[in-house]
Length: 154
Image (tube, rainbow, N blue to C red; front, side):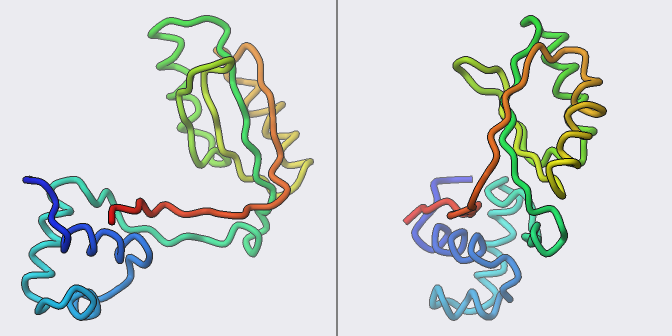
């Protein structure tokens, strides 16, 4: 797909804010008729600019209000160990994000837990069974001040 124009960027912005908007509502916002907006959105999806549409759940209301960032240091570095670690982490429901990072640690995990006891059980029984982990360091979120997946393109 060629470079995005201002209308494509506006559509991405509006969909990033609320992916549940109708094509008709988007068309009004970008001052086009629904048919070209529909075609543009389909092109953005096909081009990989829109990966998927999701519902952003309220973790606190669902009794998963404890957010933890867990830094992971692997026992050693090689292709097999790194691949095995990622494969193991993908199976853990509490882990919602996993990043391979630079610096003192190798990976950063974002974890949701019901409470400290749940997180302790997760660390000992689930994370503890991942053989490639050398050490961990947990940071507990006191207050989530900003949480957005939207990328400002304008």
